[in-house]
Length: 450
Image (cartoon, rainbow, N blue to C red):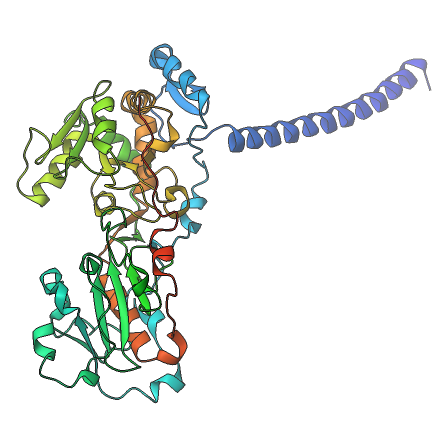
């Protein structure tokens, strides 16, 4: 074997070893880079919307800012570093697995099956349970409850409401439950219970700060059996609304087109008729209006919109944001105006001010909470960022579109009521200290905004 052949074979073996080694190093490098990329995307990129407009993005604190606008908005985002910026998951799976008592998971064909009663309790179901209103509060009647078919959708439906003037001539024992509206307890003690099995129910869908004198005396202790309220710890729960999952979600590109529509050129809308309320929302709006344009409709502003459907259409066409501000900052209290922003086809981002745990109850990235920001100015800077960068704004619309307004929760509350009345053995209870339940750390004072 000549030296040339030996040398050639030697280098061939060495080259093969080098080649194999090089391939191993290259493969390791690629895997490492992929893992790092995934880690970075998961932990740094807070907004990822699959919209390719040919613009190279600059990311500041996780917010995608187009290069041409990055300098003007960098300061606004930098200022937000003083507080914990909203953490928006980039994983769309989060929206699919999100669970909340405010999001209905019921079978659409049998939405109230959860309010069935046991087979043993069914044996005792005979005639209809009669429910009436506390006579003193007859001016506070909910007329919608006195229709014949209000319980028709419930699995346990042998119940009916009678107005107070219709039960006066009947034996007291015929009335199974009496409802006491929150406003009715002023300067009056509890009436006598007609019979031991009669149920007294406290009813109030407003926060306690609105009903300042409701059943305040000790004489009301151990009187009420159940509570009917917007509160999550009430026996019968009736929030101002609920959401449901969208059957079909439009592609992300659709919402980018919505965000870019030239007719959507107004900043913030607010519909309000109660001008001075415990939450002092009017002061927040006044300060916010110094930094972005806020159009106020109703008795507290100078703009009008008479028809609700046309108003919603106008909001979604012209405005970027809507103020869903509560009248009181109370635990679990969420205004119906918030839920209305989830009507299918309403493409506007709600801004909330209230005492509910929004981050727990509603999907992140579908709303903006004033508590994220140390001041109205910081909120205004964030709104400007979203209005300038349509890509981020479209992300909010896309995420919100995964959920739609499911409607009123009244039927659900009625089903709970009738279920309980036919199963008193399971649901028997009283409130030994009603004021403790009613007021205990339920509401807080509004924070100063300047």
